[in-house]
Image (tube, one colour):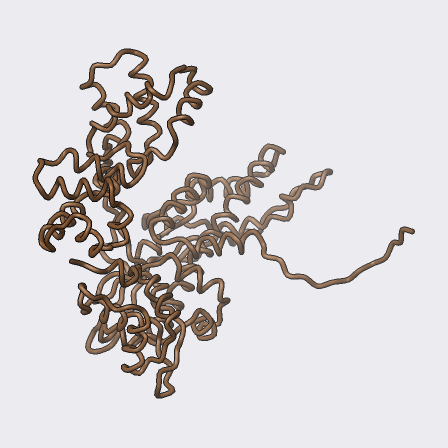
Length: 487
């Protein structure tokens, strides 16, 4: 049975403007500049730079009342207060000034690089081989199957089927294997390998032969599992060689590149410079925080749009076309006003958040000692500045700060707390720093297992379980003891 009833409830929803503001706050400096360009392209009422003094003097007089007009059909433009858009203040509402701006923050145009791509370089190398039309098509398809690290991650059978279905190239596995040997002759050495073992063997094949290269080739070809697990004692017994001979053979293998494509793409990749969003200086023993001036652009409303509004105000006979035009202008001016306000709010949010972080971690910023880093979570800063945790997260996750000790990602200053043997709360960053120092100083011939590392940290006053040591070690990208072993 259907029933109809009223239900009253209170809910809170984010407006589109609030969502856009959150997105603006999240953007780092370079992405913010791109977003600013997009907004200026979309909204012709918004212009950058400082208006000329003569434009300031020519601000429209708004002493006259807006003359209403009669129209039988109501139009929403009747409710527009033109004077709101014709401010005669010395500093118009649509202008904002950049604070903490210096010449160092000026835009610097960089020439665009146009490097040859990794795959195009391989295609170019194929021109040095004598191939018929069919072989050339297969070779180019194989090159297209190589990933950015230089590997072909697909089986020969799959490649044969794919060429038949997508390229109408009908061949067999024997022919593809033949052309694959051609690919293996390309540079960088090891490209086109199907796994790490084949990649290393291809590189060893291109080296000048000697006894150590021969031993290294045999190890990779026949004892690859024992080598990857660093079972050096087993290898010594297997090949009946001295420790020095095995050490030199292993050294030859360690000089190989496990990602041949990565080295090429890395050298030709346009380097993205990190632009600090904040800068912290120490002046007379005190910390000073500045916001990158590129986050505080000088914007104003287009003079042409203000003149159009004035023309509409002075016009006695207002046509429908004029009403439609002024409604369009109003929307653009409202959008420009909101964007200016959003930028100002973004500036304030960034500054107060970083200022709170700076004072919370004052000891670190004054001394640069990572062991002075205090435990700090998002809620600590959110409570201090009175903002939501999600807002603090948006600021921390994508912003950089320039300090006397290098440029750092802000989220790196956040860490959980642990209690030492004296009952004091210490940052997990401090513990990770001590753990890394212990591992750096260990005897690499007998690296320390996690249980011994836990004992050593306990002796230093940090009672931590072995599994926690393993977690911190993985976060520091440090392998297990067996993989840290060296001959």
